Amino acid sequence: MSRIGKKPVPLPSGVKVNINGQEVTVESGPNRLFLSCKPQVQVRLDDQINAIVVEADDTDRQARALHGLTRALINNMVEGVSKGFSKELEIVGVGWSAQVQGTKVKLNVGHADTREVEIITGVQVEVNANRIKISGADKQAVGEVAAQIRRHRPPEPYNGKGIKYTDEHIVRKQGKAFAAGGA
Image (tube, helix red, strand yellow):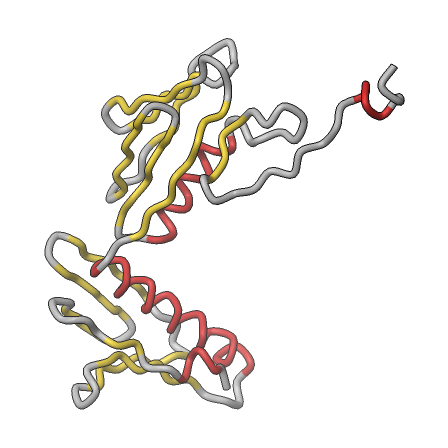
């Protein structure tokens, strides 16, 4: 049995949950997220402890695999509608920039053309100088937009140029001049 799956998901105040068969809806204010659960997993609302409980059959291998996953997805939904998720990217490079235009992020990162990344619905993107902040209620959507932006110019280890997460540490390498003995 999954250790994570056994834990109930506590509901903060202001978060409403609706469970209709295998469909779970979590909402708070303007944020609303849906999850369609697999039939091997049962989700119920426990009013005594004000939490969501996920149950699965211990004898079925597929159910055991989905137990912890379903609980984690529901926990991310509850945390997303109550607090939200955010990722921050940093652009490192002379003359490199980004700007938001409508539903797209335009990147000038050393290519001959301007690269565009579509912003997923429900995700907000802010650009301040060389920092890009991506936020939203859906953890997967926030991570996907951040990964798509980073994919256009991942950081390289020699000059340290590229688009990186602000908490990411890039291990720098020495160039050929040092490897040849400095001559």
